[in-house]
Length: 236
Image 1: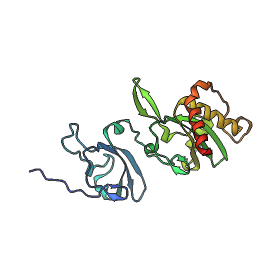
Image 2 (image 1 turned 90 degrees about the vertical axis):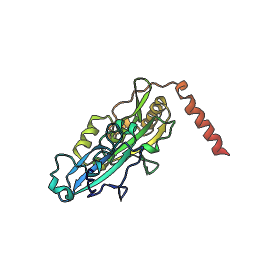
Image 3 (image 1 turned 90 degrees about the horizontal axis):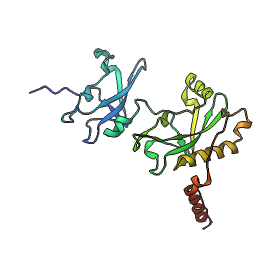
Image 4 (image 1 turned 45 degrees about the vertical axis):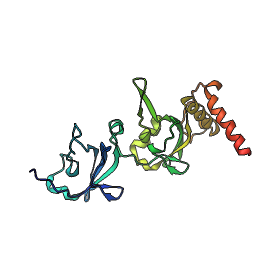
């Protein structure tokens, strides 16, 4: 009989020791941190072998670059558990400095089913400047399959803002979702409306350098219908 390895230095998930995975759990995103140097290792790991008949070595897994004699000097944290589809489409990054929507942190589980994009404002607290833009939550692959975009890690398309983000702590850039949108046309229109209302092109305190949008009223039929309905409800 094969000797079962003891499970030492257990993974931590949601501030609790993670003992067993469920049948639908496919893999996880992890962060392993050295307790003294604070050096971090970030990656993904499968719970099962390729045939999903037995569990992988996930319980005692460490990246190969870590010296075996120092294993107990590390804290192993599971950031997120994935099903098979989400695991294969996920980024091996930790979603830090989260987007805020209505003053609450916004994650992938908060995206309504009928929403595909959003309008946002980013505040650069170092230079006291702002940027207004739009971003899609998903993109299509092979015509039908929707995959998660890089929206969690997105800091706008402006090159000057991107340089500031690259050279500084990302937590110094406040990211706020202004509108959740049901179509790209709706996002384009609301982005334009916010840029005009904030007078982005008139002020040096905005990174926005140009505005280019083409939207017709027919593109906004559902958006206008929702607004009329909401206005009627508010009157009552």
